[in-house]
Image 1: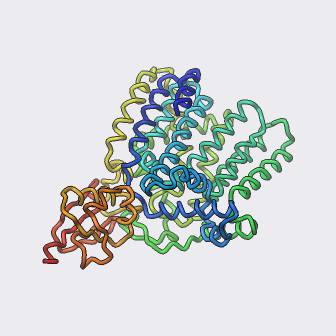
Image 2: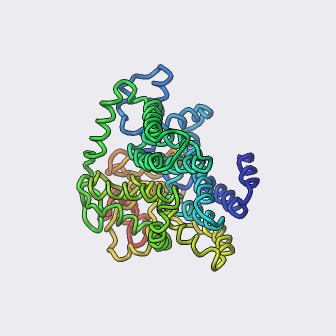
Length: 492
């Protein structure tokens, strides 16, 4: 880590961004304990376990294939890293996983900055873009625990970073093709990272003929996908077709809340993602993106990198509008659309940096947001002020049950032993973060009748109320995230 920090400071022209990066990293690692354990955390970890065992020759292919729709690219190395603390409690292993994920995200933040140095004329714009990317509250939170969507987003940044390096050196973008193939093991949407690369191979000359370059690019993509995806090793063609069917018609049964209506994820409206983007991105991001979009149309022909981000945004948008895939829990499945958003934002800023000298403003902006970000208590359910147009309970809230940790800590405020019951497995999962505190004063019970406290979470906007005294509650923008009811008077 120390060597990495020295390298960042030694890069010519990094300047203020290096200070921002180090401060952001320190606060980010300090927040590892801050978020609860989500429903899928141990399921994701089991993917790494089964794939590691299979690769080592100890496991069965059937166990790997059980999770064939979710690639092991992060999970397998994360589990192997756990062997360093194999005898430690689960709390340590979960925190180590989070440290690895946040480290990868930090690398993507630096990647956004380096791409920006090539993307824009002004260094200040590159800093602004990287800061805007790093300081979106929801992304900062999920970079600690969402090893699927945030990791996939990071892979998209790495693809573009590799492509930018190839363009600068006028070399064949083999690394970009390889990384796109690897990303497709996490979500098959990694193909969207690869399509703009094919466009560039068709329209720009390298040291290879175009047809041969296309063939080589596709070959590298497919081999990388296959090699890093053990679940498809026995029947790659059949597995690929099965994955296509799964993502186009995912039979997820639980309804999702959108604008006050409960909708099946397989039947969400075509504007689902775009409405979520409108409500969860900071307003400054939205305004600058729309302004930059107009600018990008004028600059499209002159920049390969601009073509990449525009094509990535357009093909993803068209897919969402035409195919209408199964979606739920906001727009986390397509967080990678945030990549073109931040770079297109910068196009507008870059046009005016030299005119009104925004460098000093960017320097201030580089330091303040980190402190503000660290003090946002509900960044994992962050909405902008436009959400207030709708009534409370109109949108999905804490789908993954991250706020369970806050609720259990409130239950722990006194030394009296308590039996807590909830309708999900969140108490059992979050005991790993609470560690000794949990075992001292809180006990998870299997029935409501035997409980002292009843924990109710808000996942999809609809909140179940009970005719019981309220022990503790948490409210964000009018929405109740969780409520703990006191059943002790009833038991007496």
